[in-house]
Image (cartoon, rainbow, N blue to C red; front, side):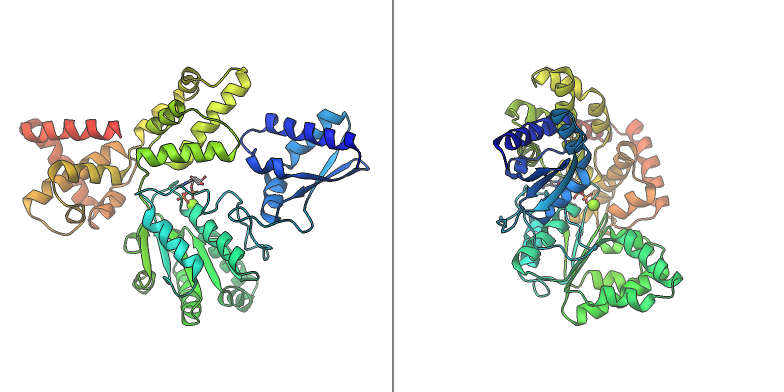
Length: 438
Ligand code: ADP
Ligand code: MG
C-alpha cells in the first residue's frame, strides 16, 4: 500500500467525521486501511461488532466521503482485521447468527452507574459472570429510555467475551411473537421451538408486548420452562413490573418473579451529567462542564433525549460553523427544552410527594387506606394525570394496582381540595416547584 493511499484514507476518515458526527465514534481512529484498489476501499475493523456497526450505520457516509476526496466513485467494504485484538468492553466474540445483533456502544464500560440503576447494573454484571446460576430469570423494568436495552446488550457482549461459542439469542418480544406467528403459518412450529429451547441464554426485550397475546404467552411459558429446567439463563425487560403488565397470565407473572426483579429509575442530576459526558466522549467530542450541566438540567426523564440534545447541539454548531458555547447550546435546544419540561416522570412524582409528606414510598404503592397515606397517594394520581401522559390505568398501576375509576375519583377530590383546603393548595404548589427543579 502506498503512502498516498494511506494519506487518502486519513482524509476520508476526517471527512466522514465531518459529514456524520452523530455516528462518529472515537474508535474510528483504530480503523485501518486494508486495501485500496479497483475502485474499492477495504477498511479493517477491530472486531465483528464494530464492522457491523459501520456496515449498518456508516457505509453510505464512507462512500460519500471517499467519493469527495478521490473524485471517483468508490465502494466501501468493512472487514475484521486478521488477528485483531479483542479489547475488553467494546468487543464481542464472533456473533452467532441473526439472533445476536449487538450494538458496540452498549457495553458495561459505556454504562454510567448511579443510584437509579445500581441494582439493575450489578445484577446484569452478576448474570454475565455466572449465567444460569446468579439470578434466573433476571427481570429488568423501567420506563422508556432508561437503559434496559443497553444493559441487555451489555450482558450479551460480556458473556460472548467470557465464553466463546456461548449460544445466545437476543430478540425483542415483538419479533418473538412475529416469528412464532410465521412459524405457525408455515407449519414449522417445531423448528421455532428448537431454536429457542436449545440456547444457553435467552434475552427478550420489552416483554410487555406479550400482553393480550394468549397463544404467544402459552408458547413462551413452555420455552421458559424448558430453559429454566436446564438451568439456562433467561433475561427479560419490560416497561413495568411483572404484576403490572396488563392481562399477563398469572403463571408467567409468578415465573418472572422467581429470580430477581430489578427496577431502573430516572437518573439523578449527577448521573445525567456523567452520561452526557460519556456520550460526548464516545463520539470523540469535547464538552465543557457548563454545557453538560445545562443539558442535564434541561432534559430529565429520558436518557435517549439526553443524547438527542447533545446531537442537536453538535449538529447546530456544525451547520453554523460556530463554536459550541452555552448560548449556542441554549439556542439549539430551544424546542427540545419545552418538550423535556413537560415530561416529568411518575416515579419522580411519587418520590417527591413521599418526601413532602414524610411517608414511605412503599406505603404509597401499597393497599393501605389510612387518611395519612390516602391523601398523598391521591395527590400523586392528580399530579401524574396532569403532568405526564400516562393513562388512568397506568397511573393506577404505579400506585398499588388501582383501577381507573379510583384514579378519576382521586383527581376530582384533589381539584376540590385545592379550592377548599389551603394546606393542600400550598402542598401542591411546593411539590410542583420541587418537580420543576429536578
Ligand atoms: P430502554 O431500553 O430502557 O428504553 P435504552 O437502553 O434504549 O433504553 O437507552 C436509551 C439510550 O440511553 C441508549 O443510547 C443508552 O445507551 C443510553 N443510556 C441509558 N442509560 C444509560 C447509562 N446509565 N449510561 C449510559 N448510557 C445510558
Ligand atoms: Mg429498549
